[in-house]
Amino acid sequence: MAKVFAQFDSDRIVAAIAAAEKQTSGEIRVHVTRRVPKDLEMRAVRRFHLLGMTKTAERNGVLIYLAPRARRFRILGDTAIHEKCGEDFWKEVAAAMEAHFREGKLTEGVIAGVERVGAVLARHFPRRKKDQNELPDTIDHD
Image 1 (cartoon, rainbow, N blue to C red):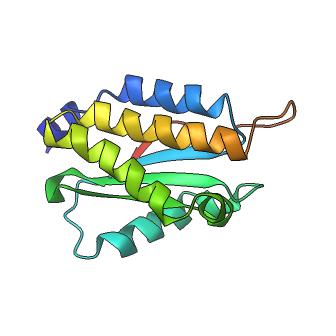
Image 2 (image 1 turned 120 degrees about the horizontal axis):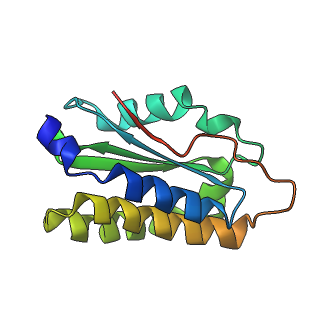
């Protein structure tokens, strides 16, 4: 399993999250699980809540949940961002990530997702002077 995690360049991913969040009040988190979840959707939703993604001031948090051993992932947006973007946006982000994943470029796939999400968050939820980073930019894992 360490081999899978070694394929992620954590520093580059964290830097991409920080860069994206400088333009928005939104919050982006990345979670990588070592498990092969039977119900990926349920696990992603559970992690979304455990990470406090629903507790942001503007309800504009986004979680990229990765299960590399299962070769699956899920992107979840809180209510405010989902209302602004709709289902097609999440499909677009997933397609951009999948293109990199198919080539074995896990870091690039995650960064592509972070950048696309960040751009849309910046458009709908621009950063204001008093905005604070509500959630850590680190990669969460179990």
